[in-house]
Amino acid sequence: MTLTQLKAFLASYDLGSFTAAANHLDTSQASVSELISRLEQEVGLSLFTRGSRRLKPTNAAVELREHAQQAVTAFDNGIQALKSISSLDGGVCTFGVMRNASYYDLSDLVQRFHKRYPKVKVRLVGLNSSVVAESVANGEIEAGLVVLPVPDEDLVIKPLFRDEVVYVSTTRSPRQGPMSIEEFASSKVVLYDAYAGWNDPTRKQLQERASLKGLRLDPDIEVEHVETALSLASTGAAGTIVCRTIAEGPGFPKNLKIVPFSEPLYDTLALVQRESSYLSPATQKIAQLAEGTLMAKVRPEQELPIR
Image (cartoon, rainbow, N blue to C red; front, top):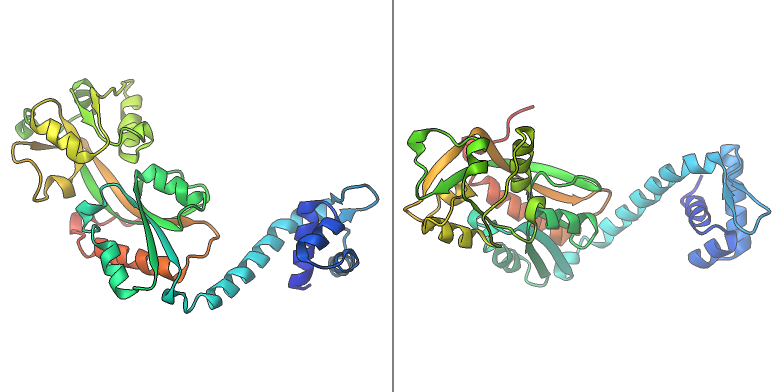
């Protein structure tokens, strides 16, 4: 069984005829037919029902297809890896980061990467984690940093660490104890990431908790950026939620009080890439740089529980 036979098989399967497969592979119809015949002799089974205007795959062909695709993809990825060894002398790196990346010392990520690899062009996309994950799954971005949970279909996810999410306001005293989901649902709140809405991973966790209690979360104000939410909260207009990295940062409004949730709530930061895809060397490097930057700041309480 050869790689050429598998490629001929896949093209015939997907395109429905030896002629179309031959055009796709830039060879002759007779060559494709001969390759398929040899493959059938190798496996001892018929792969297509011939005679109609379109090839009909047999059960054996259906069973073989997934394994053939994996073999061809693995080979192509290997060739791409060899061709890309020197690609740090050029090319484009595409990487996605969650919108609050600057609070995790990632604001100068591009500057540091470009200083090391000046010939590589960088496309750094800052979006809500749900959009970053979707863009990676669709192949629009090679890899990215996200907050979990995000849909994991077609993705390889590498969790890094967690950051506690807390409630902040000018009026709610920490002396009253932790914030319950019931109290949160009845409080006046401003939430950010308005475009992503309830697809936002942090909001999604809160919504799930509220649903289990038969409650509905309905923010009084929605804005796009966390800085706007904090500014409104500092005026006493409403409370909001932020991770501890932001709440303990130098720019956090001094008049806001920090209250944890009674059932601790966490943002889990993770690296994602598309399943069965090959990352270019440039994207591998920027992902390693981002991961190293994040993990250098991790405190013991932010480490992920061992499972």
